[in-house]
Image (cartoon, rainbow, N blue to C red; front, side, top):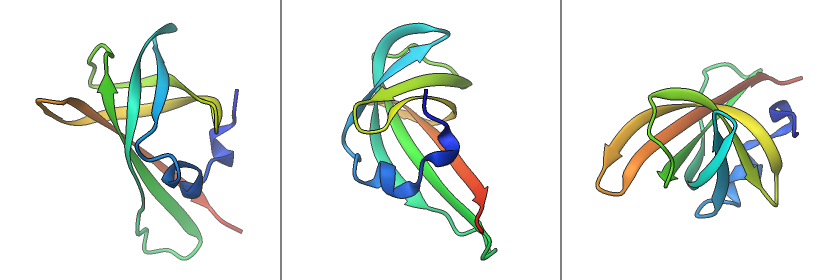
Length: 102
């Protein structure tokens, strides 16, 4: 299992358009398509932040939850995601990473 503290925006930016296998409540099934990975302005030079946006594909819908994601390029990791939108393609989920930098 990958420590998400080691993941950076660049790790996700190169994977936009790729699909991640998803496990919800420990049950494998469905995928998250990575729609975007974007830096976020924190207003603080020692705070780094970025957001990732996924589209749930064949995943049971939920409002917010910790899911387990897997991708060959970044490995397997747990991530807390929140539903932020829904349209004819499906439900979109967002996760925001924030960390202090040295």
